[in-house]
Length: 273
Ligand SMILES: Nc1ncnc2c1ncn2[C@@H]1O[C@H](COP(=O)(O)OP(=O)(O)OP(=O)(O)O)[C@@H](O)[C@H]1O
Ligand SMILES: Cc1ncc(COP(=O)(O)O)c(N)n1
Image (cartoon, rainbow, N blue to C red; front, side, top):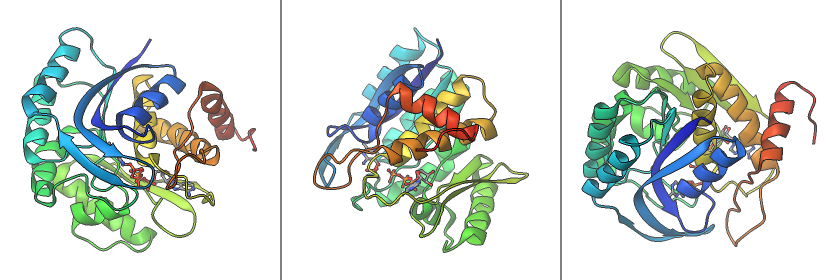
């Protein structure tokens, strides 16, 4: 069985962070592991507060995993401060795992900050270059690139600018744009586009976490980056289509193996909910 590690924050309400990642891994039938970077007191509507795990404990968790089990892919989510970023970067340099997918989490769906504003420089210089692909949403891509993004052409320009600074493939997610949910990948040479109709729902808590974990699971299974994103795009679209009306804010995406199978069928053109 393929093994995938998530290094991310904990969402006690179960929709985003480590909890979404482990559910996604289970649906993909890969063995999931977790290194917790921060404990976030949050629910579908708001973030109350969070407490970061000490950097040496983050490193010790990574050490515990890698001295025993070699992950086939690593997904990285919430890293709220420069010290945690540096600790994770040092561990990645030590163990140099294959297939690192980094979701540069800055805000929760409701707008609450999950990364300190001054950590952006460390993110860009120390962490992004270690990933194989990064998956910013539009507000995150604006912060990283320093460019405005209001349409697909500007998504492409921003992806090129981000690639120029970190030499890592960049997948900018269009979930925050009006219109179709179109994501753009720039791998340093070519652009690829992944699109689905926008599903009319506010139940999108954890979409970014789910998508990046699905990409990591597919890379662990040996798919190319383009294939992995195609499969993961079908999975996130299906998980949003079946999202749950739980809680008073943005309900969570839904995960189970049958959804993964259904998503695989969508890709072949046969599944139509
Ligand atoms: N309403 C929607 N309908 C269809 N696809 C969507 C919708 N919202 C988001 N997506 C897709 O979900 C994936 C995650 O994108 P999104 O921009 O929501 O990530 P994110 O903002 O990082 O998520 P989060 O805020 O949960 O961290 C992308 O493939 C995006 O196109
Ligand atoms: C621990 C953690 N990590 C990431 C997110 C972003 O996900 P979302 O924007 O869907 O709330 C989150 N809310 N909590």
